[in-house]
Length: 315
Image 1 (spheres, one colour):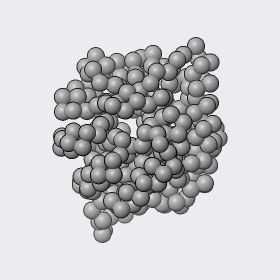
Image 2: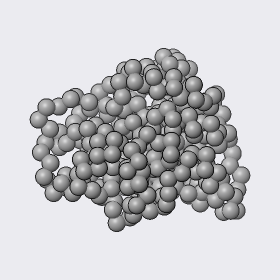
Image 3: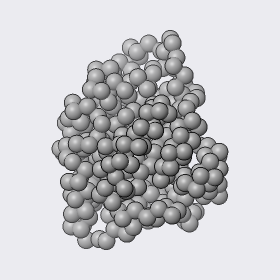
C-alpha cells in the first residue's frame, strides 16, 4: 500500500503519521524532532509545562529538525490559553487540542495563520470544528490511551466523520503496527496518530523503567480510572491505580489549580510526572488498548522503518 502525503492547511507531511502528544513531558523536543526528521509530524506535549519551558522545547526541536513540529495542549488545563498563545508566538507549525473544546482557539490560529487541529470523537463536533476553522481533525476512538471521550471504536467514527467534513481526518486510538495503519486508510482515514508506540521509543522522554513497563505489560494490565479532568482514563495497573480504584488515595487537600475544573480525587499532574520520572509506585501510566503489541524499545527511525515495511507487506 502506498501512503499518501498528509496536507493540513499549507503544511505537507511526507508521511501521514502524527506522533501523539503525551504528557507530562513524555513527548518533548527530542521525540518530536526525531519523528519530524523521518517525514512525520512531531508533537510536543505542552500540558503541565510552563510557558518558558514550552518555549525552550520548541526552540530545541527547531534546532534538531527542519520538519513539521506541533504542540498538543489539553483544553482542560488552566494555562491552556497561555500555552497555546506561547506556541503561536514561537511560530509552531500546528496546534492539537483535546480534553475539552475551545471556540477561541480557532480565532487565535486564524490570526496567526497556524493550523488548529482538535481531537474529536463525534461527527457533530468534527463538523462544528470545520465550520469554526479547523484545518483537520483527529478522530479518537475508545481504543486510545489516556482520556477517553467515547465508547465507540475509531473504525466506527472515522467513516461518519468523513461524510460530514471536507478537511483531513486523522485516525487515533489502537494504531500501533503497519497493519493498523492500513486498516485506518481502508475505513477512510487521511492520516494516523500513534501515541504509545512512540512513548516506548529511545527518544521518548519517559524514564527507562517506564518504557520497560510499557513493553512488559499486556491486555490483562489495562484498567479504567476516573480522571480529575472528569473523563474516564485508560491506564496500566500498578500500585497507584490499585489504591485509586480501591479508594485508598486521599482527595487533594492543597490544589495547585492546574486544571480548569478538577474533581479533586487525586492530582493528575503529580501522578503523570511521577510516572514520567520512573516512580511507578506513585505514578499514573496511561496506555492504549493494544499495549501488548509493543514488544521492544526502538529508536524512532527503526519504528518508522518497521511501520512502512509492515504497511508494504499488508498489500
